[in-house]
Image (cartoon, rainbow, N blue to C red; front, side):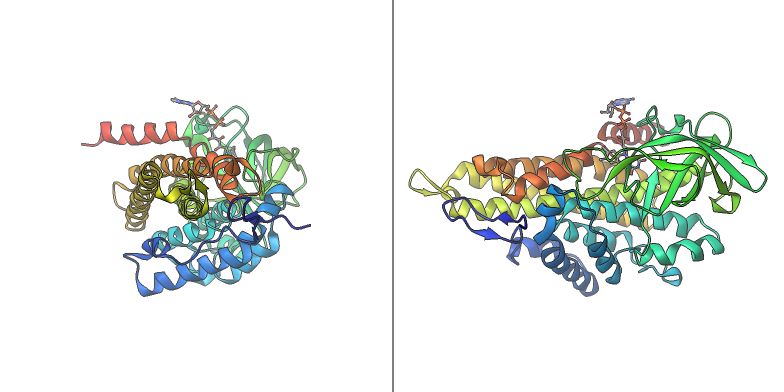
Length: 409
Ligand SMILES: Cc1cc2nc3c(=O)[nH]c(=O)nc-3n(C[C@H](O)[C@H](O)[C@H](O)COP(=O)(O)OP(=O)(O)OC[C@H]3O[C@@H](n4cnc5c(N)ncnc54)[C@H](O)[C@@H]3O)c2cc1C
């Protein structure tokens, strides 16, 4: 039996295959300020979300399915390497274009879109910091999603303090011998290419290098699949290295550049994750609106209640403000502006917090129905909670923003 969401309360008992994102004017506000071309691929992404993702998001969540074929279909539209250069199979689009696409896709399934965003980040890292051979070897298969990628920074003992990582890579002849383990790796075990930050030198960020480890490498293994609150359409596992021999030719950049490469990847990653939160909030405002219009209490629809009207207005306002901040950060990163790192952190902090609150409020507006797994709103809440934690916690975002403020001249 397929698992799908009801769009309204049980009086109607109507099963609907999607969270029902109609094309009311609220949706179109996400297109304001975009070029005709951007509106075109935004529409393609919304359609893909509605037709290929939303009908399955509940089932992928419940059965913990990693939807490889759906992601390959997304890659056929150019979503496997959105900001990777075209000569190696990428779409060559901007960070703003990317944000527009991830917001739209997330309305159909946050968890799957968030994995696609991590995959895109890895592909961009190889495209940007790899040499010609590395770009030609890895990027085409990543852009088509024939192969899938994972980003490996976090370790059991180093999360927020990422530069204290302990996984070692010892040079022996023309190979590095890796030993150590990575924790919480998205896609881990099911993906083919691991972009791994490891220690080739002394303590601190300058001793870190970045290696691309292929799945079939002897000495590479994986922990059990983690049981999670959300993000269930993508596996999360520990990645373990035991005398894992990786060719020196798989090193991105020079020895000691790995931490910088990891952080540059994350600047874009933070915009992408914030964009996934936007998509969830976008969907939830619409779900809340639809629910208020049909649910009757005290002899009238909830939409006639001014308290709830004001709440809905605040949710929509915060969504639009969040979107503006994400798009400003995306533009700053695209233009390599000096405030880009701060803006990416601000966008991640503000937008993942605000959008979580929007989704949570939408759940509240559904009353008891919002707490039932029959309704999509609870999955959006569960799926975006983790955006406040990963790709640098929101406390770490505050550290980055304040550090930049206090040190700028
Ligand atoms: C579902 C999921 C998927 C993930 N995917 C990936 C992945 O693909 N690749 C990857 O590398 N990592 C991944 N992560 C790991 C994620 O990035 C880390 O969980 C995150 O960076 C936080 O690290 P930690 O869990 O060790 O928490 P800790 O660093 O132990 O922090 C615990 C709490 O203390 C706070 N804290 C810590 N230090 C300070 C401080 N100085 N000031 C104030 N507050 C502080 C933190 O903000 C947090 O609230 C994933 C995590 C999850 C849950």
